[in-house]
Amino acid sequence: MSGFVLAIDQGTTSTRAILFDDQMKVAGSGQKEFTQHYPASGWVEHDPEEIWASVVATVKAALKAAGRAASDVAAIGITNQRETVVIWDRATGKPIHNAIVWQDRRTAPLCQKLKKQGLEKTFTKKTGLLLDPYFSGTKIAWMLDKVKGARKRAEKGELLAGTIDSFLIWRLTGGKVHATDATNASRTLVYNIAENAWDDELLAILNIPAKMLPEVKDCADDYGNTEKNLFGAEIRILGVAGDQHAATIGQACFEPGMMKSTYGTGCFALLNTGADLVRSKNRLLTTIAYRLNGKTTYALEGSIFIAGAAVQWLRDGIKVIGKAEQSGKLAAEADPTQNVYLVPAFVGLGAPHWDAEARGAIFGLTRNSGPAEFARAALEAVAYQTRDLLDAMRKDWKEASAKTVLRVDGGMVASDWTMQRLADILDAPVDRPTILETTALGAAWLAGSKAGVWPKAREFAKSWALERRFLPDMDSAVRSAKLAGWRDAVRRTLSTQ
Image (cartoon, rainbow, N blue to C red; front, side, top):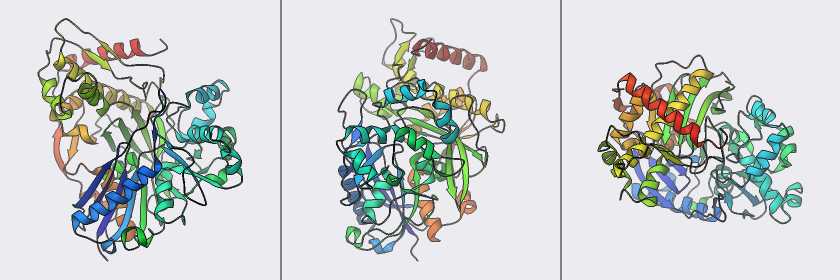
């Protein structure tokens, strides 16, 4: 059987399809951006039809770029933006509303109402999550309440709901399969991660009919075949994982204590805790890292909403750089005697603060502060926020070694200055791999290993290769002073002092 495996990487701002060969190298790829819709302040939506069209187009582009046909592909793996949710008509496959994106804050009032009812502990105990608009459950409830006739239709079994992976599987299989994987299910706010099942009590609280929801499968599992008329031949779908979980797999973080952090629009750090379902006392998330062969591996996760988006703000908002890659060079020119801090709470603060009402702030400005200091502050904010996550993880899980090595990926890690500053602030090594397409690679590995054409986990882990290790090189007194300044800046930014 062919060793070619196709990864569909459906992200927040673009869709990519990457065809990997039997040596797990990129043979061809396609990418297509799609429209971001902002119908009201704090609301973010995507058109599911545009996402679907982008998936079909990029798969065809990847096959064409590699000079391959669908019949050459052993399997497809899907990875997706998490928490973004769609409701569609079971009979026609047509969405009843735009997809509500993970960044969307419209359900903040509902989350506050549930908190006031004392229900957050119930949700957290069962799901490992906090009551925040970030997660999918309250988004489903909103659509059922706000779209005319939706609730009655859902109760009749006429509507289906799911995260983006479920919607794509439904479309790819011609409506034959309604399924998701354990990682995406674990982000919905209605999935019991200890019992690995949809939770009837939580569904009742949010008034979501269970019949709408997909079957939950392992990450490497049979998700059906694509319709022949889509790509010229049927292709088996054998792997699914949410993007951060796929990146954890692509970074070969299979052992407890291994940690990865992805630096894209936001930053998401996952620490593998193995079979230990660690309940955070420091407002981190407990989540399913992956589920293989019926065995669940858990993780602690810290979610930072703004990472690379701060660099986009430098470029598009205040226009101190023309291209994102200029940020590191500019930061290196900053005056070392100035202590400028950017707390990038543009859409609130994520872990470990979870302050939806906080807004961005800059501290320490002097008359001499300029573009270089702003660039350094934006990049350092990523390092400081990661340090906050790592500190919380170490408090939560005694097995988290002080010698933790962080494996990194995402667009920001190409900047040597940023990665060195990250190592300096963490006081820990930072490893950058040779392959930065770790999210797509993780999805491809799930499918390829299930198909029997790619190696099992242990051999796959051996293929992980280091491009460069960044070692801390900052005086401890300087680091301590910088961290104290950061923590003071965050304290001043929080909406409740």
